[in-house]
Image 1 (cartoon, rainbow, N blue to C red):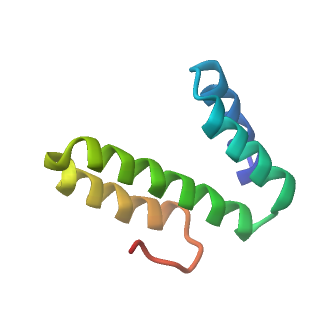
Image 2: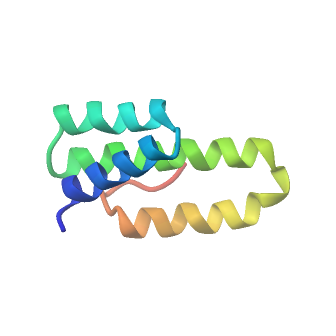
Image 3: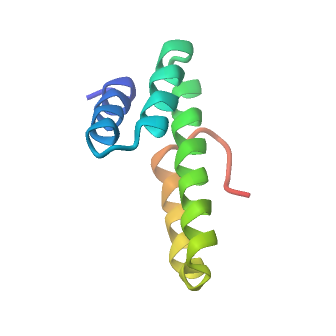
Length: 82
C-alpha cells in the first residue's frame, strides 16, 4: 500500500471516529501533494496531534518524545522533529 492509500485509509478512519477536521485536513493534503510532500504533510499532522496530547498531559513528555523519534524514522522526509 502506498503512502497516499494509507493516508486515504487514515482519513476514512478519522471521519468514522468523528474527527472530521483532521480527516478534512488529510483529504485536502491528498488533493495538493504527492510523494515526499504527502509524507511531510502526514508527519506534520502527526506532530501536531502529539503536541496536543502533550499539552493535555504534560507527564507524557517522555513517551511523546519517543513517538516523535519513531515518527521521524517511519516518515523519513529528511527532517527531524523540533
